[in-house]
Amino acid sequence: MGFILSADLPSLNSLSAFYFPKSNPDVSGLQVILAMLRNDGETWDNANQIAYALATFKWETANTFTPIHELGSMSYFDKYEPGTALGKRLGNTSRGDGFLSRGRGYVQITGRGNYAHFSHVMGIDIVSDPDKALEPNLAYEIATTGMKNGWFTGKRLSLYVPTGGQPDFVNARRTINGLDHAHDIAGYATTFQGLLNADKGPDFTPIGEA
Image (cartoon, rainbow, N blue to C red; front, side, top):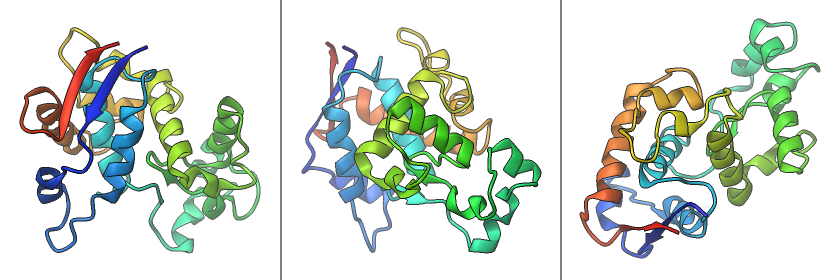
């Protein structure tokens, strides 16, 4: 078993003030994620990895902490169509795959090839029904095991956020999408790291290695 997070889920006032618009501090998505983190004794090696995962979820879900579709009009996804450079790289083979296989989840898996890959490794068909990747439990499993095992880019999270060493939150972005917005996400991860490690209130309390 790995690192386990204990969270006082009803008490999220400090996070809602920092991470959500003050006019609509909806923390329901974050509560769902924290519940899954609290029950996940297999994925994480240390609290810093959880901090980076939370930062990634924040960025990839447009601050909602809820699985979402990749944003854009239908025509926006023409760049992913078969015959385009991106479409070929993503394994899109049929007309309409660009929109059908657009990004979904806590981490935006994109392209027929990636949906087929995760269908294989997860044992669940998300090629014929891509919206399954929006179901929180499956979206969490895809995101977390993908980061842990290097399924997105070939880079494992432990390479950049090791146990017993300094985390490299900037280059940890290479586990998901090169260095796209790496510094923004690293900043979020540092904030989460403080909440997880520095006893700044009852919201997050790491209980160590199990």
